[in-house]
Image (cartoon, rainbow over all chains, first blue to last red; front, side, top):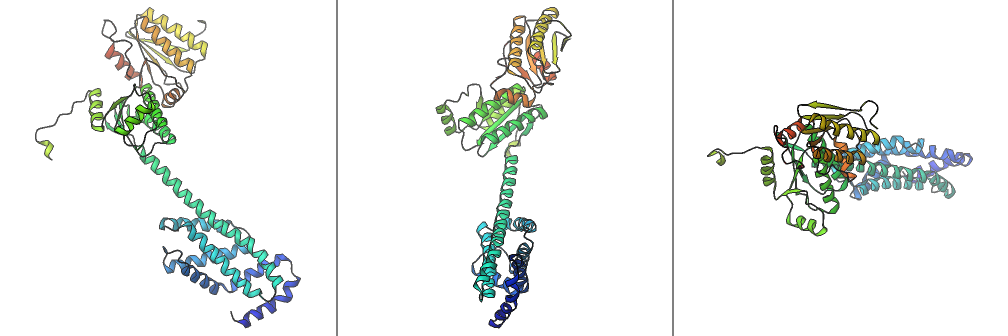
Length: 301
Length: 135
């Protein structure tokens, strides 16, 4: 925009604006932003580039996304409703989160756009300080709300992704596996908190009923740490399994865990424990009456 | 206490008694069931008792204590007791509340209970290793 443009713009606006309500300021502002869309958007894109944000995206994607963000932004200023933007921001987050875009980048680009637009308003209304003030009064709350909306949508989406992943990890982490008829294995991998321990017990009891299990081997080789709460959960799980007619063998107690359990004084006298999973399986097979024999020469394969 | 129709069917199956609890029993009904069962053990000269609680979705502390008492009384009358059909939710609730069946044997369902009794109750002889439960 040249000096001439600005002064002409302002001179055009002056007479009308003075007589208008504050309500008229936003539409005028929106018209201004629409008019200079290409220039402002490019300015914004170059600011993003200078700030080294959004490295994960290609220039083409950047152009497309910045255009739609810009249009959405202006639309929110016009309508005052953030619903469409919320929708768009969630959609955008869904696309860019898997590519490693960080929260600070998203907040950064929205704030950059806010600044770019504010600058253009300064430029446009620099002749009349009072009017500029009023324009900014109208612009700033809306702009802040937009920044807020985008940031919240992004964080919400990220939390949703994290929750989803937590759920799938949780599902994956407590498999109840039938190894032989009436014999289940339950390998525990990762930290056992009380929520997971409860879920594990539930799945095990359901598994005992479905598979009509008589013996269950719980292998805790993959559990890094066992504290008193977890040990008590294990005791409860063993008791509940017994009520359903299945006996439980615990395997894979590391020396450290064994020492911890003895030191904190959890009563494990009712628990059937065996050093490793192999031993546990052998004991389970014995309880169920299986005998496993190896044919001569078959072991080499 | 022993008036009115029985709420628990007690069926004779060979030398065993099969008692199925169909609905939640209140305390007096539980006591009535206990009296009926122990009476029938003597009458039928039963050697084993199966108490099926598969229809129960809740078992309170009085209920589980009564079951333990029944098992102990049955033992004194010469029969081995096994409780079958405890539902997963019930089992979990029982251990969470610190109730259990003590030394009384438990099995998955009626079929398992019969196998358990067949294993331990000698044909025509004394009941072998009676209070022994899987721990």
